[in-house]
Image (cartoon, rainbow, N blue to C red):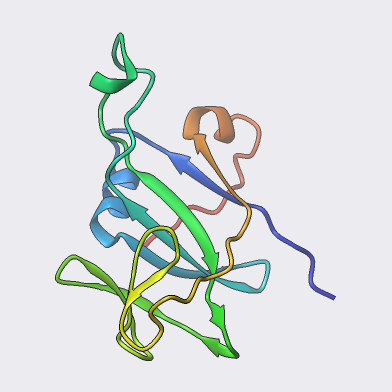
Length: 133
């Protein structure tokens, strides 16, 4: 029986950890034995470093999805700035939707994922595994 794992994504502004996520943009991993994909994209402003959210630093957005689709376990990579699956060459967006290619119109199943500020998470869960490419 599968026990659902909760994916927690830490937002760590101005650190090597965030820069790693910015650089790779796609993480193929597994949590609790469940294969997942974590996508990352620019476009979310910080509410903590400015007088208004609109002028806050862009800290990006992350989302997690199951890598399974129609019995396949897809693997993803970034090719020329686009998220592509290696099995069909379909292009995907950060919302887990295939936007071009053989799987166009298909949707990955979201995994429960919560974005946390690292300082608030690490204080209570210092044993947390941190992704290293």
